[in-house]
Length: 343
Image 1 (cartoon, one colour):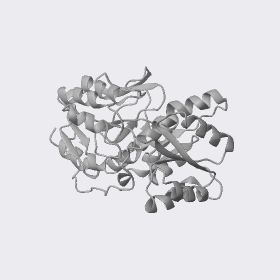
Image 2 (cartoon, rainbow, N blue to C red):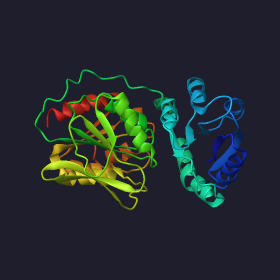
Image 3 (cartoon, helix red, strand yellow):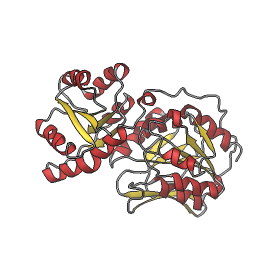
Image 4 (cartoon, rainbow, N blue to C red):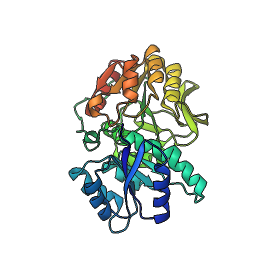
């Protein structure tokens, strides 16, 4: 099997060389070219035909987002963005990037090498499997779901996603009305970015969205997103009221927060009063938790293969019998309302 051919687009010579040295240590990777700006990158793409491109957001002559907007319609290519803590990363994902990594603030060589080998390498390998045709497919808003008719029912909607999930979650949540039961979400993301992502959704959707904190109530028309970092989000019930608890814990399936941890708590606390949704992502996080929810009487939905950027998590969930309904991304909000109205 031939190595993954990588193009590095980075304006810092020191960091660029560090990327080349460390990525080439992995026999599954071959850095075929580097570029310091989008104009050099364009020429390198045409000459070397890379499988994956890493892209800094802040670049000379043209920023990375504008470059993506021009590149993707003409030459679709899996792109992993390397970004400082900034909401610009979501503009890059919206423009067609597969995923991103948070550029470490540290300058020590050992720490930077650890970041490249343990974070960036993984993202590049995942990106090489992504279906780029799905990245630019914008879901058409579904306004004919009719709303939620079960007022007075204490229902919960729990969603989990990973690679490709920021855009997938937006595609679903933007079609939720303020009548939707309380929604809790785990999206694999580095610390700091989840708060910006929640604010972005809050500005773009009808429902209210915020990064979750311990004690936050799970209310109709509200969406809580688990903070990235070293804490898991759990559903709890305090004095008969659904709340979330965000507390430190070890990685589960390589992730913290973990979708499985959230779904397991929903299965125990909400049982048949819950609806679980698993979206695009690499690996199997959330599959066993979704099965636990279904066994507890919850209803479950999985994104179908044709609309997933990476059909990993939904596939594992489907294969083990955790998925009751499998739908295209653009139909999931409609399905959500249909199922909730029968609960």
